[in-house]
Amino acid sequence: MQEVLLVTGGSRGIGAATALLAARKGYAVAVNYASNEDAAALVVAAIRAGGGTAIAVQADVADERQVLAMYAQVDSQLGRLTALVNNAGVVDRTARVDEMSLERLKRMFDINVIGSFVCAREAIKRMSTRHGGGGGAIVNVSSAAARLGAPGQYVDYAAAKGAIDSFTIGLAKEVAAEGIRVNAVRPGLIDTEIHASGGIPDRVQQLAQQVPMLRGGSAEEVAQAIVWLLSAQASYTTMSLVEVSGGR
Image 1: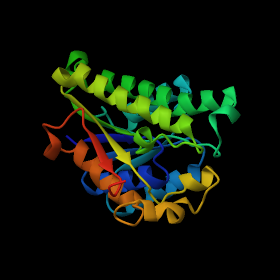
Image 2: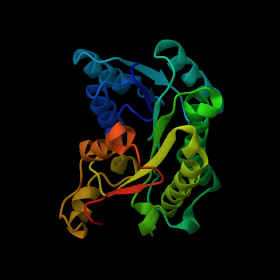
Image 3: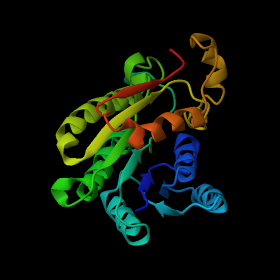
């Protein structure tokens, strides 16, 4: 039976790199996107061009109704889910905490934290032996910011990723006996479009000298860690927070 993977925020950056690599490893991939349908279509087209199976599924992970509709689409088009990558996330413009609006904070936690919870909840219903599933794997995309705090830039993002770390640890213990492994990666300074969305498009170049390896990482390097954690090669690995940060 083919493994079925859902990658949230799969149209760009780390999500797209993960979807492409997983497809090469034989997964049928559902590429989730919130609004950029064209970007998701390009990822799906690339997977299909390589002989793989993929669909694009629209959903804002902060909206439970959209998440439920997304899972229904995956169920009907690809079959029972066996793997989830909780990658969808946002940053905001750099700001101090005393400058952050309630609207900003709600958006940050609705997408980065609550969205991951709801997506994991629906995945567990399909994977867990308690629910008649055959097991599976979940990888949450956290951030080195959870350790570093991101002062003066986005403490709210760092705090949301700190919540993802705690979520990973607790959920891993909760479902370990039900055939589900739960891990996280903590990317460091990675060269993706998320920095531009935070108003610092050249952030990787600015901070590269702070990384012991003296460079930023690539989305593909993070994807390698994610896909390994999903795979049978990581069969005894759960509750791990894997640093992909060049030593930073």
